[in-house]
Length: 129
Image 1 (tube, helix red, strand yellow):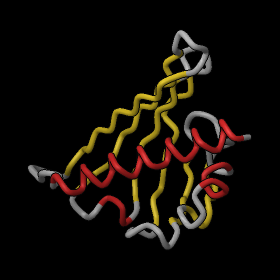
Image 2 (tube, rainbow, N blue to C red; image 1 turned 135 degrees about the vertical axis):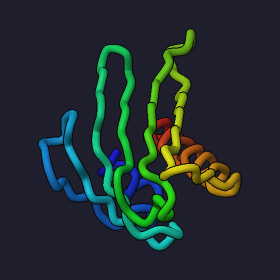
Image 3 (cartoon, one colour; image 1 turned 120 degrees about the vertical axis):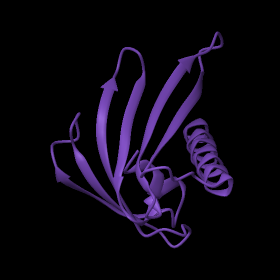
Image 4 (cartoon, rainbow, N blue to C red; image 1 turned 180 degrees about the vertical axis):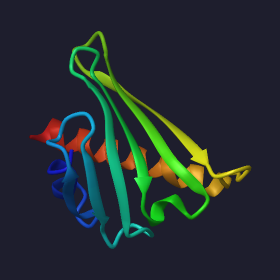
């Protein structure tokens, strides 16, 4: 995804740098977001990759994307096969806040809409290529 998203969504990501690890579970990456984003950076940790179950879990552990009151953002992405040979993507996002902080609805909506736009753009790119 790190090499695909910049091709598909120009301006979404400026760069992605591995700070620790080799791209497998435990890897920590620093992602510099592009001008299309209201945020500048996020640091992601890869928590799980299951090639058989077609799932990928990662946690955003640092960066201005956490808005100062979010401890971390956990994401579980599952590619669920369909009868026609395609798949549906299910993405579960869990916001872990600091103390009793509550994530505003507009932040949840932004995260949902952004993820949906990314997956739709990747889908369109893969279908056409």
